[in-house]
Image 1 (tube, rainbow, N blue to C red):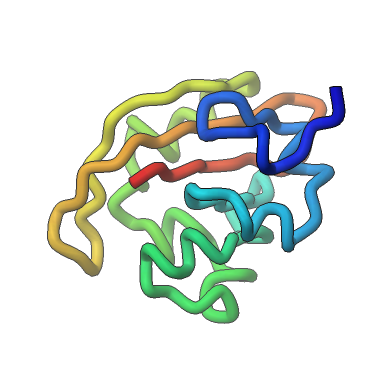
Image 2: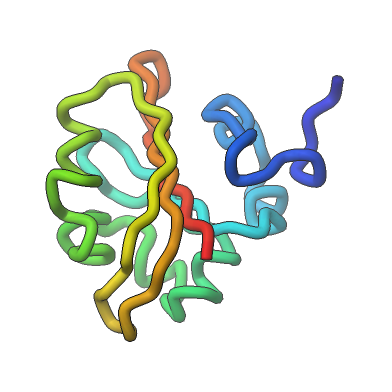
Length: 124
């Protein structure tokens, strides 16, 4: 089966899918995608997340995700898990609170030891 963004959703997209998609394919996904290196510097910030958050990708890419972009995720539930768990694929409800009225979302955390980039997916 050929995997394309049209047949992937929040719960089925995988790390390898995200890594091999073009920026345009990630932008077409109906949920937010943030990809960052082990040092948490943002490398991927898709158009859906930019639209939903109101943040311009030009101001987000190249800065530390948990320190400068999503401080409300800099805690044991999100940021610390990337430090503690080299293999991670978990979906859970969360409430975003920074720069906005509290917003209920679902987060999906993705990481694998063999892939340097880690991802937070955000479904509103």
